[in-house]
Image (cartoon, rainbow, N blue to C red; front, side, top):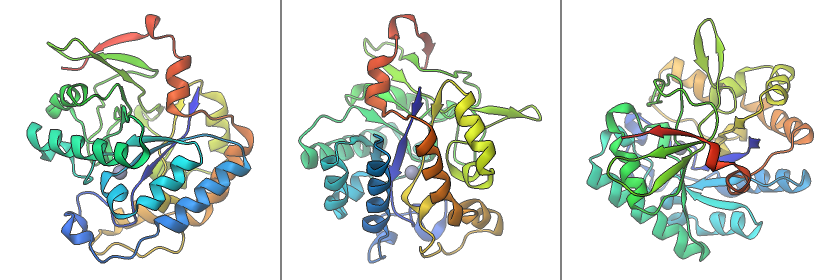
Length: 285
Ligand SMILES: [Zn+2]
């Protein structure tokens, strides 16, 4: 099972950076979404592949045509929060309000239920595991926020799941179906190659081998990962600039080459084909 997903946000939705932190700081900025998402959709169509698109509610409000275009191509629309804020910096009430607003915005636009979620920056950590309870309360059934490795904006490195699992929430009758990121290990540390900096850094031949060898793969791509002509965010350190922009020129060709060789699925098809009866059960809260 190799799952293809994209987080639909703009070039300035970079977390934990002063110049792009608030919704107000985004107004008036030019957008790369129309051209980048069009490129993604054409690329998927030419390889006959389906994906799940985790969209920001903010994008649905500001650029409804982009979300409509994805939906009209038959891809799954899922939720990536409304305002792309770090979950561990929010209160449960703020997180609930953000999640509800995003789901409403996306459902109004597509006319379909939205029950799949991924947190901004995988920022549900062990300190804010209450977020899983809020998601279950908000009608979310499938969660793709578990990043079982260390990372700058969160990650749940204490959680050792490598396959879809059932997440249980204390005092809650409903459960969450979890599709975690998959990881590899090097020098005793876990790393995640199916998106972000490692995807752009790793040579194509190595990526192809990892994608072929691993039985379960969950990807996370962004429009900005494939867009060489994008403005650069102000105020990033040189390390973050490297992490954010290295390898963008080659990333589009890497994606095409994987689409050529790997048969991907979206989250909803992965959900249908998972044997949940025999899946591992994990206590989330
Ligand atoms: Zn994001």
